[in-house]
Length: 304
Image (spheres, helix red, strand yellow):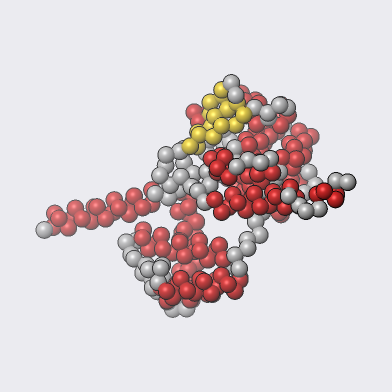
């Protein structure tokens, strides 16, 4: 009997480990951060956070809705649920007190999310120009140009960018293929290959700038910096290019790729194949943004 109990305990631990491995490290870190906020709320109000119950979670979501976006509420709920799973507890997130409360909150505050601005291709050109004119050493200039151009042209998340190694890169006649080992949307860990074609002009060509940087780089990682530094580099040169740096972030490269290609007429399917989006909703938002001027009713008048 004791042997059976020990075996079941081992299986339970292994199951919890599998649950952790099913999510990317950044996702797990975000879950913990979100759950800590929930736990703090429960502690302050003498409520139980783990295991918790639908009523307590629903009260927390109402509290959160006063100063948060609806998307934040959904993420916090997912985080609370995941932490319960990791600890072997069940939380009924489909309970009417949670579901109906969220419907009411959604109607009250809406779901619009003011995202960071995308860096369109002309913006990228302006930033590359600023990098070229900067006082930094030539090696850092080349790294930053390759970082910005590859990040944009591949629709990369910043966490994906800083994880690329030399073995992930293959230069081919048409351009370069970059293997992404795992990402936020690739929970199965299968990975995906992104193909970036060569551009006409070398100054703005991600392939040529990556090639030049890899010739200089001595690290196994192509961009041996933190994902936070990606955002800092973008903000720095956005400011120098005359943009409001507060409106841009690491995600601006990825959203810029999606918006620019949507403006050029790329299909939802082709955009998603590059960015790795699993949901079409976000891609449609980029296309909608791109169409604001492309299909504007005033175009015929303004072009006269």
